[in-house]
Length: 239
Image: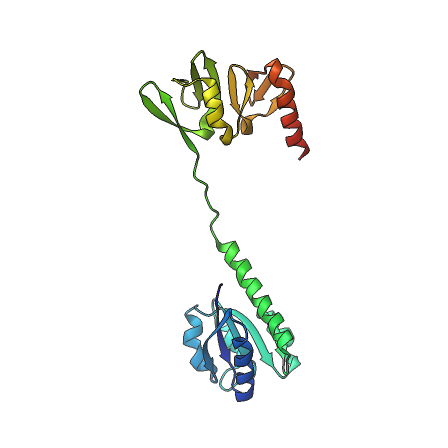
């Protein structure tokens, strides 16, 4: 469970206690500190380690709204005030929600949920996309096992008990039968289109009556495989 760190900035003792009680009812919220003086809260707020700030508007020395304007990277801010006059200005400076005192726990919870949703959206947007590792496979070539990047394999041709793997680099003779490679490569989305040919399904760009088309390449399509292959790509185009 993610814990969200909260700070209370409120100079009224009763209002402080109400906020503390409400926050403590929610197990995913943690009170970091409670301040009566906004000036004392500034160092902590500038550290960037606060998720949600509950702040009154009218306070000594500096108002809650003026304090917010000084923060370069403010947390989610829920204003609590007895005056509705500040609502327009509050949303202009980017507060998450505006609670008019006295407010119910239900209204408080709605504001908290809105703040948490905003935090999660921002966190997700800031995450770097996960780069998937390129798939590799090892195939036997005589006494050696050669590494191939799956995405580099264009097609595989049978040569009796051997096969020839055509990749971006150069054709490589492999001492494994096409039937063995079919079993090995099927989980990697390779399909048999002819008794002598195995192709990566994700590189197929078209099908004719006699060929499977891989961009500029035409690979023979076996009569006994045609119906299965046509159905396979009909399902793909229809999905």
